[in-house]
Length: 129
Image (cartoon, rainbow, N blue to C red; front, side):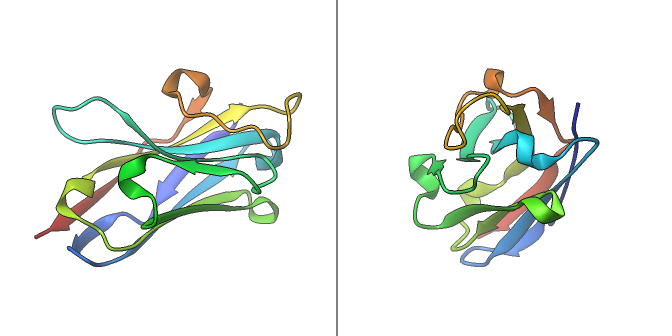
């Protein structure tokens, strides 16, 4: 099983940017489709972005389209979430997730939290108005 560690969270003013990183260890990240989720206090965990094993296919929740970008560097076993034009409603704990998908299409990605096998501990993002 892969271990995931997120970093890059913090406090930022509305309109600012942050880049989250998710470092994978234990198994090659190339075997995993990856995703980012977030959870705000009192709310359910929400899908944010997903990326296929190849990195060529991505998807986003509507509320972040055009502002967030997910990418991956398989040589570094790392997935990124670039967050621009941040809004107070983006405030949440952000979680990285991995789904072992070696035997599935290189272009497959997943949007359901139950699809994922491994989760990081989360990193807090706070956007002030």
